[in-house]
Image 1 (cartoon, rainbow, N blue to C red):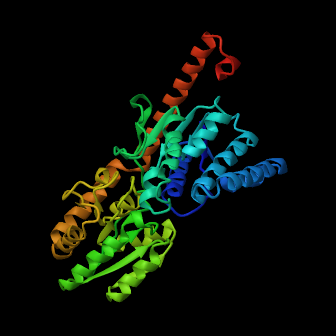
Image 2: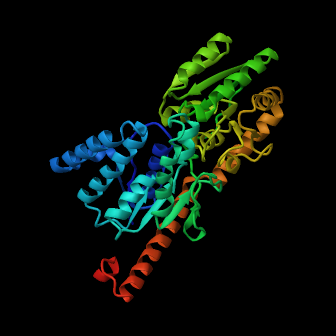
Image 3: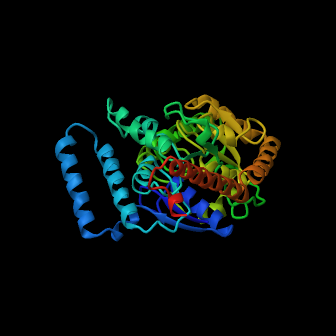
Length: 397
């Protein structure tokens, strides 16, 4: 198959969506498919008249709406128009399927190239992340529901990366919904024998409010007061990093902030850690957790989003209630003190990563979804042709 992935931002970039794109590209190319990416980084392909058109749209939106809505909303609206222009000027005629990563790009694909079968992956909820992330002013959250509606209503097949469905997402019809778990390269991320004293704890990901790293820092304060020894490394960066550094310094915590690092570096360093913490207030199916599991780290995660799909409580890790500082401290403290429990859960974490979140499993599921979508698209085209409608791909057969 020839597959076109579309995404609304610039790539490569930090974050789970970029990791997802690189992962499925690797998976699909290994299985013999051709994969290309169309994103904002391709804006140079647009002719001058398209760029001038987009500039006029931006000027008009700023003039008419600039004092009424937040800039984040206007920027996403401009991206929607931009992707319509990209798809209109990028030759997609040879692709078997388009795999969109955002509602914005799904809308553009359906509007500009309805003749190409369309799959869309839902990575999160614009509305929830805007509100909980503090990026959207009070009273303007409902504006972002349109982007979530695009993500659910435009594709012929909607993929979610966990069984969890955010309550703020529009309802996904059962006949178009497929679950395809994220995957990790279990040969790249794998355990390595080590003995740490004190116990080493890791966390990784973009440092934003909804990721809950402040909850981790507060739990570490409790553990220090209890006299427990540990060392913590946080991989990642974001607008919440400065606050975390202040909290750690003021409380004299043994926390190292590494900043943004490549996945190659993570694959080398994660096997040296004993515990991995994902303290999210809001999340979907974080790659960081399954990468740590594949390395034999014991995952400790909040009961939000798809994290319970990854962690089976007290079987391959520990779950705690989001924002419950005391419960998180108790979980980490238990693992620090109980070496045999830590070793057992770490082994089971690796086993689950290999058995359920491998690249092969993800590749097979994606192929199934693509083939099913293409067949459904062709069947719909045949029905339209039978009713005498024009414009179907089938009409060219």
